[in-house]
Length: 399
Image (cartoon, rainbow, N blue to C red):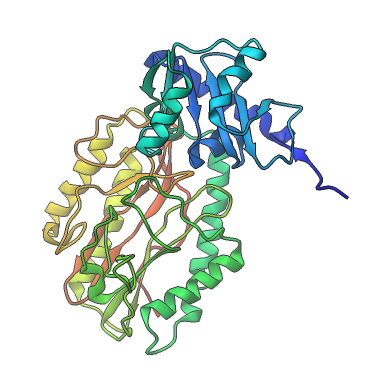
């Protein structure tokens, strides 16, 4: 008995994929890109609803074309697809099927190695090469209603996990042991167990637990806060410290349950903590309430950052904001299929908010000798402001 073949794109996803392809094509027309040849994991998933080894070819108009290398197990009768062994076969397949060869092709410069880009450019030697990654980043910034629904489901699962976190804490356990217990809850809740990231400077396991002064340890990665980690090969997150009274524990764990992700951070305390830490945490919540109000379509992303800085300076907490020993100049980022999507929320951003954008906003503080405080939520931009997709109490709770 052979393996049952499933539709490459399920019937209930066909309209969704068409909507995404149409959005990409609108951006292509503005950008002067005649075709895209996509093979990066995130973009293949975005343009097909699944991951396969091969290529999504998007012309300037009409349906997407799929060149599938493996696995050869799909019923592809509902899509335009061809089986190939290597990308060099694509032009001959196109010519055999009366598909015009493109004059300009966009490639994923940010996602592929130099050798991969050069190989794909040689597939269409007479075409002008362009940055297709820029087109895809813009297309994926605004989510469809289906994508927002997937992220809403992620947020509910993530909140269900966070609700159970206090039950697994034990006196004198290490931060690594605590994180492993949280990871177990995540997996049992249905988490896929992997945070899909963009860029070579972004590596992490299933998330980050930052206890006490480890929150102030610098990291080479582009995270808001660091942590030393347990090995030089992955210098981020929990470092094996035994957790004692008088410190905070910041939990920023994986929210990937269905190919999309939500990003949520909450803080617990062990025993009493200084008033300065409580004040900084309250400031974080104050920032979020203000940004929820002003974060409407047309608002410059830079205004979110600048308004956060205004509140921090008003509270005289700037020396602790977004790090202490090592600080970062952003307060959040886009989120979706990848944890770190466009746009970064910085004071230099030229992007305007648009309805359907999804943002992880994380105004955080590091208080020396105590640990990290602050809240991170994932939001969707609506005409009424930012709507939270990670509904869970924000107060500092006691373990």
